[in-house]
Length: 302
Figure 1 (tube, rainbow, N blue to C red):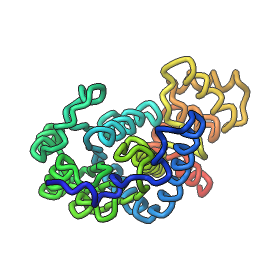
Figure 2 (cartoon, helix red, strand yellow):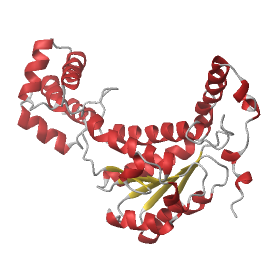
Figure 3 (cartoon, helix red, strand yellow):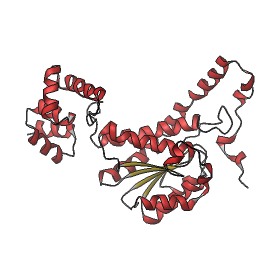
Figure 4 (tube, one colour):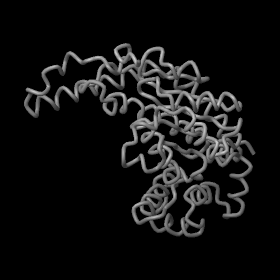
């Protein structure tokens, strides 16, 4: 028998006990007031998130992958974060991946029973040929999902690094991961509905992990995503405006250099900043970790 009463995510919220009798505005206010508390909880676990980021970054830097996995809302959030890395930072879809218990069909149609299988997680990770070079991140708001426990056990067995994210104190999954994060956001407005505050907390932490890794990998210059792929009209315009701002050039020059670079914002920017041709810039980026700041620093020290 599962004792849900011991889980922080299953406790009834005293502030929303009469929510079914409230006006629309009162309901919205209660939800909003509870959501405001999430950021403060995240702030308190930044030291744990920092350790997780360093682990993930080291694996990515050495050619490994970051693989999120979970069931239900937690799994969907992992898939979401992973799927947004390629268009935002121009990385391969293999670098950051997301797995949800029950497969892609579970993204749209709930398959809650799949979370109870440790073996299914092992099968899913084996299908990705998980290796000791990779870092996995198991997500379970309740901290007890068997699917996530199974995946973390398998990761440890083959020597892969592991992170876990839950929203309870002393979550079961924490004991199986190298770098556990426990963001205890407290009782949900609707008892047990962890797609709310717990989901928000997990989304925020995933944003922090992937974004910080991408910054450290040189995918950002200043606070601009210079590895964005200009694959539609909006992104092409964003790329040109980025060049106008960062290179202090005209819109026409930005368009010209973007074309000369083969629609590579990072290359176009460096061509203007150091007045070198495309081939030279590409070699410099390769030499200095694909990082604009590193190239500029090396140029300054010549």
